[in-house]
Image 1 (tube, rainbow, N blue to C red):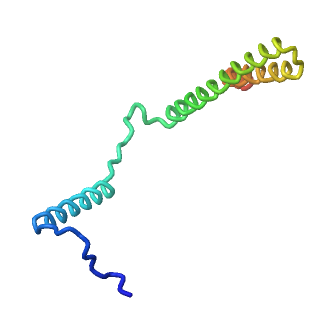
Image 2: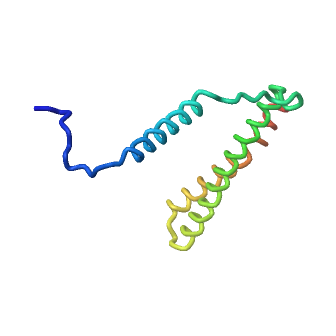
Image 3: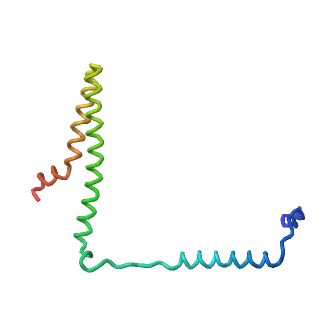
Length: 119
């Protein structure tokens, strides 16, 4: 059994097309190698390079995400309370109020932490 036997069902390809295909493949390989091997490292500017500024920006971003999750929970809690008032279901009402309270606490987590730490 010969794995590398010649396939005779192929269409004939002219020599110019073979040469063009080889050039194209070598160009793609060269661009891929050059693109992977060269990376630009940018230094932070002098005024924004303070580590505390970077940490404060990251903290602001994370607390913004937490606030978004809290607002989603707050809205879901309002929907649950409204549905429980419509269907007269006390267990759904208590779950709605718990979700509402959790949403309020998560929404104002940064302010609560600031009040606790006194900073």
